Amino acid sequence: MSQTNGSNPDPDPSRTTGLEPGGGVPPGETPPAEGSTPGAGPDESHNPTTGWAKAPLIIILAIVVLVAVGLLGYALSL
Image (cartoon, rainbow, N blue to C red):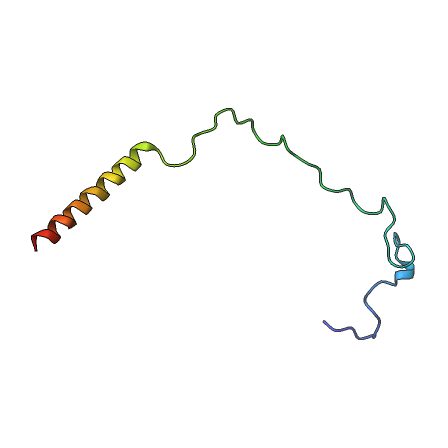
């Protein structure tokens, strides 16, 4: 979209409300900062354990040991 009248689309800084000389903004002209919401979520009374459960680790370890023993047995039989 082009302008046909050749005028500057930016507002004139000398007529823009809320600006001080030099382009600064006086206190109170900007909206307040965001509020903090530390207690906005639900209260967590149960904190589940982190990491892997013992049963899956034991099963995976058993499978790895069985595969290793099988490959070792296969290698020795050759």
